[in-house]
Length: 312
Length: 303
Image 1 (tube, chains in turn yellow, purple):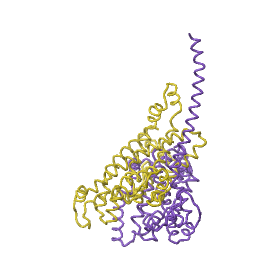
Image 2 (spheres, chains in turn green, purple):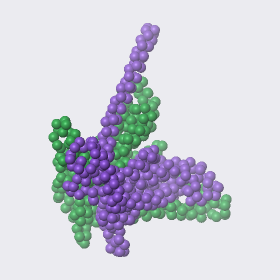
Image 3 (cartoon, chains in turn red, cyan):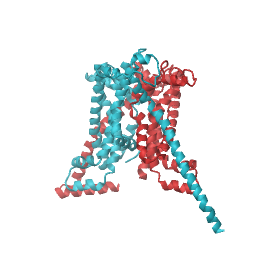
């Protein structure tokens, strides 16, 4: 509030110094300028984000040919389908497991990178971030080829250890594992970078104090590192939860939801129903089911980000 | 009593010191060991892409050791780089990404400037709204957007679906919110005295933006540009839904839909295509790694 007052005063002073226009005019000019500067942004968000979001709710209440209003018909139809509940279950398993392992691997590797002399850190960090840089559609193709049933490089390697050929993408359980593995591979570097930045911001004195008090490495992590990184861990995890929950590329390219819809998640199922089977209202209903979970995560992120902003 | 204590403390401290540095040396060795393991995990797929791209179809279907190239050949590269279809994908991707980067900057820089410096009615709400928009995933909006574009086509007769330029309208929804958000942070960190001095010297708001804010926040600008480019280059869902004709496809969709042809063993070509498709972001990353990482970490921190 104080900011606004000061700024108004300043604008008024400079304006009156140049020509004798009133305070009112200067104010009007500034807000007009601000309005025009933000107008493209507002239009973009309104036209291509807000409107489609509302339109999606409208679409979800229509029948397949989009002629008739059916109210919650699409939703009740979905509730009766076993496939839909499988999608809900699979999406949750997929998102929670993948995010957990991404965070865990990111945390562990961040410590290893932090441990080595500062000189080499840049090189290692650069190498370990590569999965995040490659477009996921491209890198998933490499995984698809690694998982290939008859020429699989993984099965070739495993055969030396006497482990029989694994049907990576054809068997439901293995397909679920593979999809999560690829997602962890793709997302862990992001956590690594965030945690590494957070680790660097923990003051060394805290560890020295803990060492003097006789803390072992586990106690240092539990009582110093984790509390200091709490906020960044929360934001990163929630953010990744949103992205992973809404993931499309990896599942689509790796399994297309198969075998028998066992690896289908919300985004791929919405695509299957809405675009491939041409039932747009039903597809819209499926993707709307993501909203509650995304909204909860978004609210928590917003709270944490604001808290972080206030601290600094 | 006190002398004994000192006597005891001396050697023990020395021993402990020695063991601590030995501990540290072991910790270092273990760190390197695990880092190598994780680097293998993270780098296997890209390396495997390189290995396969150097093999001929005959070598791949002969099922020899998949981790080694016995007869390296550049045939896959030559074939793809002389194929009009592949060059068309590459061209589409390039033009879409470049235009989207420019549009994103034109929208987000002025908006971020207004949101960071000019406190106006609803500015904080708008800033929060921008952040929330950034959290809206593409998989939530592709169906209504598809229907919306079809309706526009029906009403106005302007063909938007199945044209590469439709992507110019939808990609900014993914890039602008984040770029605006991080630019607000960078702009807000510029000392107020700087623009106050400019205004006292008689500069207009626009001059303050172009002469002071943009040059000072250049690192942030580069980070935002890299982000916008990588996102538009990698986007897969929107082009998959909105474009279908082969000459309208961008790289990720083009490679996945045209190169995968049932049981023909053209994995060499697929991997080459994927590698070439991954090359532009990788090259940018190799040269501008610090900006890339700055942009990545700026997203979760406010300024």
